[in-house]
Image (cartoon, rainbow over all chains, first blue to last red; front, top):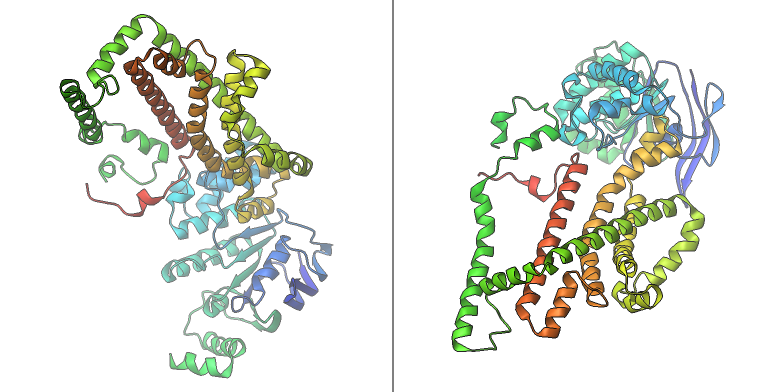
Length: 250
Length: 287
């Protein structure tokens, strides 16, 4: 399983959102895409998901071009996008059911993923009854349940509070170690990117500014010298001189 | 949060917790009824005083007790029972016909571009015409039987339900469609499992809104060329200047409408049990 992005361009009207993006993502890799809002990182993710089409260039998975959304590429959305009229278990079983798994068997399998995210007690609850972090766990379980090769995550923890974010990162890493999918994780948090990613792609103005190899063993600590060094380097790439001096003062 | 003591943990699904609310709270019931009771007492007093002092013709404003006794006399002739039965039948037939056809039309229109380009201009053309204006035409076309009445009720229900259905089908959250697509759903599954459920709240609003319109259509259609029905009682009472009978029919229409609105609300809550929130849930107040 290899995802290749070659010379991809994308514009909305006159506005150039992505400018000749080249990227190769290896199997089982966790790739974090980092950047300010409006830098094109979500657009890149939507292209990989197949929700958008590139103006030029190619996106291929194992040499097969991406033509549209596919169950091999699971997506976790920032606003979780759970179906509010289905309970938690049915939400997770949705993918299996629409792909033709018999209902009882789909529910059975969904239960395993519910346990994976630690919400087995909430199988019968409806999304509106859950907290933000719990909803996002269900979102992750739902994306994983249909057995995708690639997991695409669009700022999944962006709406969560800092403590929940921390727990969710650890959970995600644990799940990734267990299931070993390829993950493309879009975020605007530098520490989150370093915490999770095998590589961090920094985007700026629709282009890839720089790619960093993280190379720290899990679990990663914030006081690790490499962690601090990466934080500084990425900050320098992301921000101009003026902003940078402000960050240090803050 | 009185229920919290009954529910042992927060994993109980919504349907069960709503059952717990069934204990009738007589105090709130009384509080809700009090303004209505006061209204009738005031009416009674004014009516009686008016009969004493003749401020306006006492015939014009009969007190509630007189209306009840006149209503009982009227009931003995059997006209009230038969009127309620035929009015209920007409409203049930016309209203459900209008709702079903409107939802089906809405679904077809949202699925097929052809139908939308060829049918919606026509609906936009005839939609704004008040349904009641069509009644004389319907009577000439279809006679004075049940059919034109039911058709008029159905038509006055159809337009609003259709508009709300189309709106609901169009305003589905696109992220939900994206997530269904990435989970491997095909177009048909997306329609039945995502678009339709997300349109249901809007469809139900349309149905609630059109209930009032369909009752107007019922009353007007019974005022023109009918042998029974609550609207007929009103016209008949006018012809014989029996104002109290008019009030009997008006009150019965009000009661029947309230009953239907209540049943619709119950049905809506049942269907939309998964929906939480709204203004009521914004702030919890101490009881």
